[in-house]
Length: 147
Image 1 (cartoon, rainbow, N blue to C red):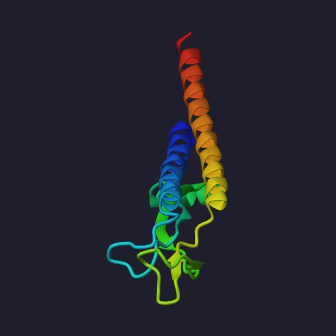
Image 2 (image 1 turned 135 degrees about the vertical axis):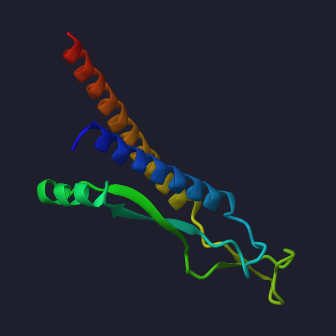
């Protein structure tokens, strides 16, 4: 595995975590949204699905599997909606209240989303550190060759 492979793997992790952070931020922003255009009921929490994918062309992948089968890129394969039922809250004055005064609220725990955001941020930072370390090693290798 060379410098370019390492850069590619780290950058795929950065891209995936950026999408995850955006999705988590959208969940937090809509934690009290009771009505979504084109959707029945309140906002539904979304989750990002990651998949480990091969890193290069077919020949590269076959060679890599023979020597280091654990090397994979990260790819976002989808964003799925949480299928849990909404929280029912008694609020008879709310415009979306039913005849019993109950309002369907998104089943989003802001605390859980904040923990997910911190975890995603740490993964982003780790990929940034790996990317910068790889760049520094490549730069050092070039300088050794010069002199």
